[in-house]
Image (cartoon, rainbow, N blue to C red; front, side):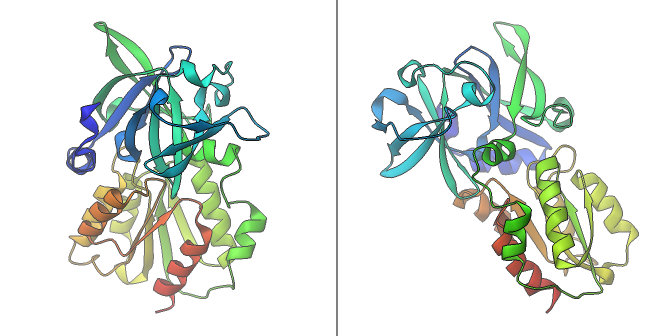
Length: 302
């Protein structure tokens, strides 16, 4: 667990080498799952924190813990995955994370390892199961075992923590925007692509969305740079990720003037700081439609 220190620096170097660092853990039923280490704030021993049971309409929410003086909603991954939920005391650890500016703790049976995986080793499977982003293999007792990286955006949507429905988008898009320029976006999550499409349709702007950074960069190289009004990119993607997309644009003499907005669920201050060092022009949490509209208006109508 000591590997959490310096994790953002590791993340940055990992992106340069086209790898992701994953915190690998056991669920209550000993299934092997993982989460991107850049989303993790700390690993907490469950019995060392105060946990309050709260009225709830789903067993996915296990209660509220006080961690570092902050209230943190505890998520039972077993329940979300459709498996029987164990008692809170039966989970040894809480993986304390921040998603879209929301503090969340995932109840897990135990940590297994922190590993690096190249994007070629991560198989994208969201189209067949919306709760899974990638699958890969990790070594357990010298054997290759299947490991699943769960889809955080889908989880937040399932517990109704997102403002990404059609009514919410209409509420935050204050007006139609007029621009002759094209917006390009890279986003590997089907949930987030759906939200972005609805957002752009509501604004009336021209846009193209690609499933990864490789396709977006290819399109960038085909277009007249002066016709591109803005680029929106996720960070965590297979192939060319958002860190590499932003670096490519901001270090290219013909493209560096194009505003780059990061749209990511990895919203910790450390991650934002690393992306700012690349030179990105804005950072919004996924499903933060209000701020996405403000930044789009700022850069498209300047």
